[in-house]
Length: 205
Image (cartoon, rainbow, N blue to C red; front, side, top):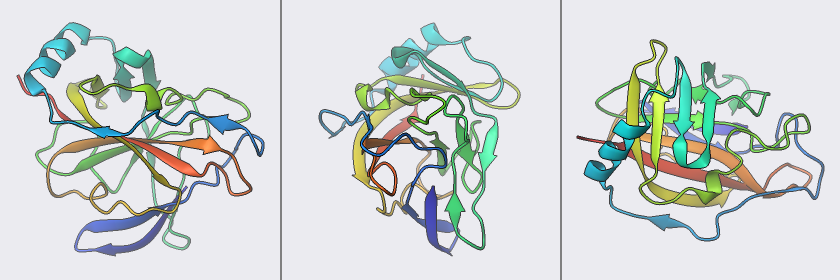
């Protein structure tokens, strides 16, 4: 889950805290990236690749061709005003979109945050299980409720501690970005200890 500490000037100030609604057993592990990286966007190349990979999705879906991901993402995930918790869909094969940010469609500013369990007892390999293996410049395709496609190019892969804050990603202002978030590491009493986060920017022809 996500723990939100405050909402200031339209920016959600959040700390990630995912004990996992249906976690795997203590000691089980989920992938972490071999290395973390950040690269400038290769928008022209990404747009060309995206054009060749298009047409695979449907309404409310996220597709990552290089990882073989094609997952439904029609569920929005909301923050409880009492506990400030935000949970991904219980089904690890499905993804959720944070309803405090931008949706899967086109927008001029702000972030679309897509979250999913890496693994649960029912689904040992969630839709984002392989996220830690994504490569620089990989293409991500998102489809809104009408099936309109938005192509993205991946520019960053990093991990954080479970309780780290990410105010730059949780906003409807600033540069347009897509954040894909899941968990990783060895499960402890509180769940997975790390967050695996991929950031992508819109591909431009």
